Amino acid sequence: MMFKQPYREWAPPVRRWLGWGAAAGLLAGLQWLGDSLIAFTGWPLPGSLVGLLLLLGLLALRGGVPQGLDELSAPLLRHLMLFLIPSVAAVGLYGHLLTQHAAVFALSATLVTVLTIAVTGWTLHRLLRRHPT
Image (cartoon, rainbow, N blue to C red; front, top):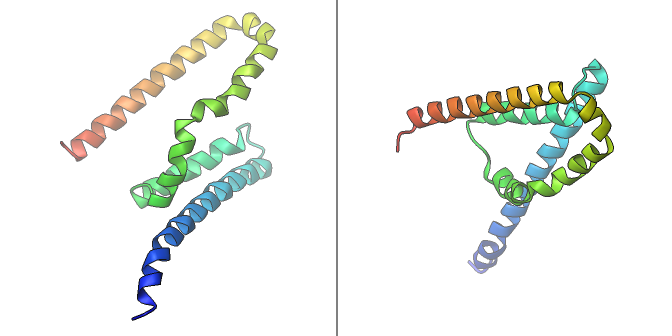
């Protein structure tokens, strides 16, 4: 009886840290697997994109986001714009290419935006049909 009380005090934080560690390991492993697949196949895609698609597939198979992954990713998603600063700064380096191919850039950006809105709307529609409020 004497050992049950201390166990109850430290067990939940340890479980939370183990969940975060497993989630970080999963994200790092999928990043590595995506990079490895790109290196092996030679596809003209970023390895991180392939890793994210693998994560999407795993989450779809599981049917949801594990608590550890949700807790780990929430602060990262809140500060997502900080991760985009290097990409935005790189656009300044290639401004001459953007002006040279402005029409193609505008068309592709418009098509990708329309496609993203359509897929997001379709997904939301399906989710709301499945779980009405």
